[in-house]
Length: 538
Image (cartoon, rainbow, N blue to C red):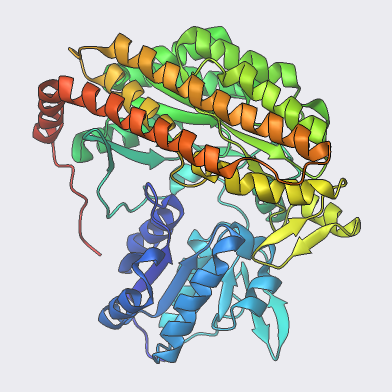
């Protein structure tokens, strides 16, 4: 094959809030003279085929995080192959990296799997293909050879994150009542070893230091650039675990806060992080709040000690309670991950978990959300369930039996009833979106009227919604355990959530109408301060 300098690469993945993984891949390729096009997998096979034919890429790369989406990606790849596309197909992400053998078997259209951090692997692959060299020895790949899974030498993790260019962001910022929002990263890796999470396995399997942190100055420089060039006022840190741990973490975050003040961003922008509740302490988080922190996500996961042990959270229930309490006292909004069901669940622990949720959000400070723990590929808990003979389902939809088999049927019935609260765009998500809106404009837009009244009304509605959900679970779980096979009242759940949704819409719209002029003026000031449209260069 003749050399093809500047060969085009087309990357396919989900673009919710911007896909930073794809953005970093694209930026490294562009830095070395290659043109890149980012495509949302939800565009559908026909649209993606049109873009492939227009771009004529040397490589089509698929960015897959969760195994549940593998059939959608496989459908796109199959459609492209059936249409005669002969580009090199590769795939990367957590699941493909850890379970490359499963992915190669499930998606035969692939030529390779790029394992672990893929920036240099993809660059190496593109340049070898473009110059006609053999690509099979590119470090960090897996592929099939005569039906056998082969792996090249592993590629080490990128140790100096500041050596990477800033991610390519060819999309418009998401808007919260007209205020632009974009994600960014301060670090990669997680020091913990939760049994249900593939992140730590992903980083520990590849050579190199697991947790790496960017310079605080570089992070603030990126935020400043996005503030000026794109009008961004809300920053969403997508770190697996924001770097707050130990003396080094405290020193780093102190510098971050100081630089935010020096840059002026502490008074002009706000930001959200994800961390463990054990890191939340009053003095530190008070300083972070003053520097712009308005929301903290915590992976709480369970409200019973036995659940935390099975999930290997290395946390206590009291630490989670303390973290929530401190955030409330400081006026920092919070959200959380919570698994009402895990492999150790009983009817009793389900109700104890509901009691825990009532303790942290019964006051309406956040809408109640929960899910069932799922055994992701590459996680220790999936391996343990397989050893116990409890793993069920298939590659893309893994499942497991509870120790009390009655919980299998109860969970199925409950999941249907609570879907309008906790699934996708359920009312709990809608309530939390309203809280995000309120928290954003209350911090960034001066002169708003009725903030206290709206806060009080929204808190009351959220508390009522939470209590209806809690009672549904408590009552139905006790009845089912006592021998009533009917499960939760799905019709009543529909009625309750419809009422909540209607009341929320009325409350939110009344607040927006009351402040329409002030909000429009704030949006106008953002637009006047600089361009917010994404660069459209491929």
